[in-house]
Image (tube, rainbow, N blue to C red; front, side, top):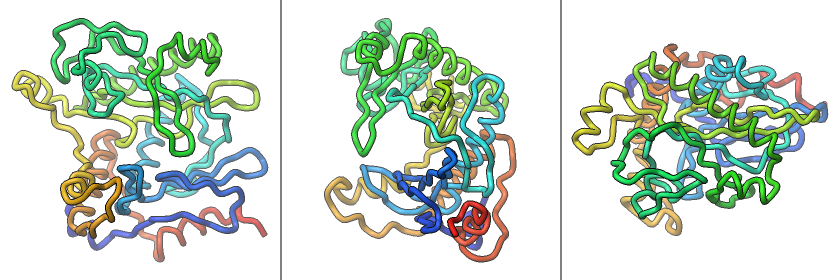
Length: 324
């Protein structure tokens, strides 16, 4: 979608505070409301989070994340139960309220990543044993691993930081039971395999992804949050992989880091005030999110046509949940 079309259509949802909805909790990107009957309303805003702070709002980002996750929840419902009950608005999912398990499941099929917990970072630091796995010597950046692996981390709540875990540590710390760990692993590998299969049909490689699971009142493990979105997953364009790998270059991906890189080049984003971010940069980021949605799902992105603000539209669609 071209920048001028986005400029004309752009409406922002930087905040989704709705006073008439109960038990509000605001995360980095989503606003959540817990209903008395055990349902949770999750509204994906357009907030862009990096460096442990909100940098700006990107038009249609919340809609892209919600609708991409919807595509994948529907494509994987036969493999694993998920929390979804309904979609009253393009930015909103109503789901079961779950007790979130304190382990984040990350599945990786390539030696990639840039964070402190990524397998590539640890491998380049000389580690060969990580997350309960032993990787062979001689692997190159972005090389495919011998087989997909799970690299679990502690689930950081309330602004904490994730920490690497091994399956043995997970069981020793009683984060989940042995039966739960076996089920989580089976679900994660099945979801990832389905994701790679569908991504390949659309000319993409699903490189790695993270999953969040919870348990319902009956103790069943349920897939929560989001699945295979541009924010939770790394995708490469399949046609670029081999030539880029042979040239020791990173394969082509959905580069959404325009804003992050621009800010990091101009200040210390962890301590300084954030300079005003150019509109063109924000619209370019919106275009990449929409391109990611269309490529990942094979569907056309639909621009909302309702009058008024995004929050007004959402309020109308959530009227049945409002307190009197």
